[in-house]
Length: 426
Ligand SMILES: [Zn+2]
Ligand SMILES: [Zn+2]
Image 1 (cartoon, rainbow, N blue to C red):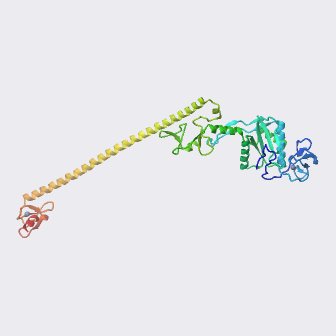
Image 2 (tube, rainbow, N blue to C red; image 1 turned 30 degrees about the vertical axis):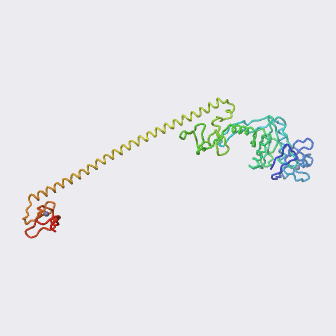
Image 3 (cartoon, rainbow, N blue to C red; image 1 turned 90 degrees about the horizontal axis):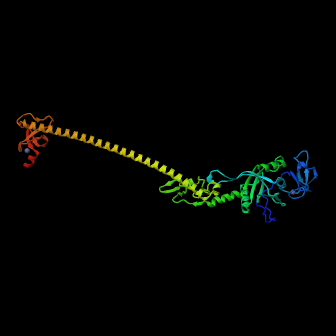
């Protein structure tokens, strides 16, 4: 699909797809006025020609089919029904000399659906009758109004004739010429009630189904916002924030995700094109003087600084409390360790004491055995610990049986030779 170039009237767009609907309007062969099928006599007496190919039309007003016009010559004329509606719309605009235009808004992805109103929806007077032009085999016709000295192209979309791609192509085309363009969302040509003159008048008066394809005002504001913005790129994964939204160490910086939700970011992609440092937030900020704007920035920054300071204070207080708790816990652990040591020491001392007492008792028992030792006794000398004591006949010492090389025998139950003396003898 391409559009007729204003400067070169010979260049005609190629028609995207063909439709052939009943024609509801004919052009009066004498006056050029568009006449609805209901307003003309039947047959060739209708005195109408096709608004597109200019060939004679015949009014078919029979009993069976819906009343409509047809080319008398059965000429293969596509889009004559749609072009007829364009021409009726041109005629209504010429009569009324005004049009309801949709509101114009500005938005950027980071605004998350929020919009800035640039111009309210409203009825605008036309500077003059709109210019209508349609060559044979041209579609769509050129229907261009002038509002406040600016061109406004009017596109009628019948039954979603234009897909998304077509609309963006239309937009680029109008952008290149800096012409405004609105599109009316119409049903397919064929609904007689919808396309009646009365209804079409109401549509133009109320702006029903009208939306901007391209609005230079929106484009101009978008450009203004973007021109004032500064491209901020991440350093170490973070973007320096002129509004001090967050602080990492000694640096005021934020992750990109924060920028993508910040209304001062006017990037159209996943990046940061920042107006924060300049304070352009609304349309009115572009009119406010620089001092007021920068004062606003300073205020926002100060508020954020205050909040960050508060957060830091809370963090520090929490850290202090954590440390205090840790110190107390460490003190408690230390006390427990000291107590455990003390108890262990006491247990060891008790054991040692018991051991020493036992040792002393055994020593006392040995002394008792020594004091009462009778080597001639026929009874073995056994103490209360079941230790058997023998006197060494060589060294004379009284030793336990285990320390003896030999002992016992008839009449010498309690004597023998100790191991030490026995070794000396050999
Ligand atoms: Zn025709
Ligand atoms: Zn001995």
